[in-house]
Amino acid sequence: MNNEEIYRTTVEKVFDDQCQSLEKTITYLSNHKMTAAFRQARRNLDDRTKNDILRDVSYPF
Image (cartoon, rainbow, N blue to C red; front, side):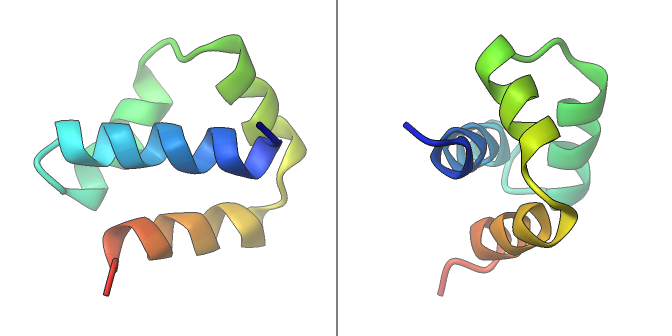
């Protein structure tokens, strides 16, 4: 899996676990220890890509 896939998969899982609340998802990702692969993906992706993924996850249609 590449960085974008790792980031997207983790965000989708957390988003579902947090009752599809974007605010709770972002808070969770910031405050909880995440996997090394996710942390590396977060470091390697630019802000635009991360924002695109968050938007796609929160607006799936």
